[in-house]
Length: 618
Image 1: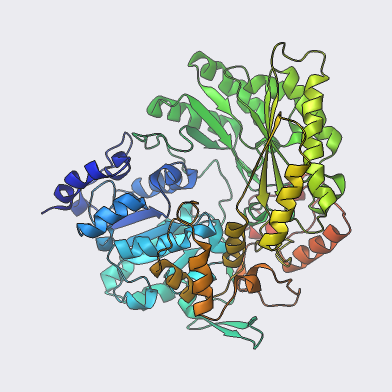
Image 2: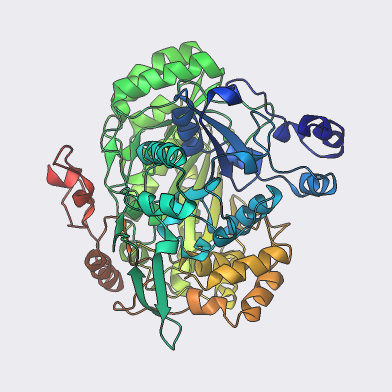
């Protein structure tokens, strides 16, 4: 019986069967006998999450633009579908062909969040493959991974054959070319991996030996078999020259971000000391307004979406934003297409900009003060004053907005209970700013939503040396925040502290966490980013089984001289710079953004031949 025939009766037994059938508008179908490489692009989360990810759309398009490559999408099944697949012996399959991915040449995972690691193992197992790299003997399939979590891939070193560091548009194709050559020559998997390790941006963990000290910290990371001592991330130097999809796969069901998305820039000029993305995606690179306008037109013509989202780490820092809006608004208004800017900086979100984006349809505005007091905002290098926050909110209210969402963090280094109470105080000042405005909308009230995440220390940030608050400390701060909210106009949402502790442990973990991951998965852990699936008890037992503790990785202060598990991987930002920024945090001293003055972080060294100059060089 074919896989398709097996699928048909079980789809009636599961929720949202459209997750599992493929055939959507824009999906790419090829003849298997007319391609030489088949690539399973796996997103270790549910369909609705993976289909919302722009990086997947870009790499899906780039790979499929080659006639000799067929890239298919693969998502983690929900619990009901997984049970049916295991009961009826249905292996994990590609949505385009409905064929088992264990027969493909590459299985590639996008690592967006540490809590997806057990799902990666589960997907390999569902595919019918051994989860450990050493147990997969043949050349195919090569199991690879990339994305932001690849900046410290060590917890997954036992399971993944190779990692792509940085941006994948070019290096993915280079790996495919090398594979085709290795296949023609009859090379072994080991030989392919040795050759792949010579491609800039490719990290092969099996070619590095890690030794440990008696206290559990890393003693040394030693390359072998000709692997480079340092692996540097890859970047795309000119975003106008890199391929961007002319169409997206349009899902049959609602997904989290069900809209067209344009990437206006990569990198960030700000240097917030807690923000991993702000450092690992450096240097800043803009895409031209002309290119973006054409990209938007292409997607509008092919997808039928009624919203275009202008995405980046800080969209209002994009220097061509007003020109882009001048180009894009006339035809989007005519077609009744909404423009969304999901990541705005409070200090440069002008009243003109807010009026422009409200022309088609008003929705709530989202800002991220991150901390409730000026002292703490300076310590984290947010470079944002209270008056700038309130002034921008007043401008938003004058433009007709009545809903504001404010993002904060608790557990930040140097934080006190006074800083926590400051979150409630700042939210109240935003509410008061609405009601004290003479030109406020008549007959309308304001709603301020305060969303509070738990600080997680991450690699390649100035706070990578800092301990995370314990769950007890985080819960105490959450209670203190709620006790200081005095208005019904303010609603508070906060994250689970236990999940944050595990995230910190995995983010700063070493290779010894591989057996912990496997034990947690075998005990039932998967889809750990979803509260209904997460069990801290399973994880606690898995750590104990291997005589390790999450607190060693999450709650321990690290010396500047300690060898980090990721110290052999280079994301452009120097250790010296991170140390200097960490020291400045404890003095509440700020660092100017990249366009004001270059701080010498080191990211400019990623440019080759001086072809493109970063903002700090201008």
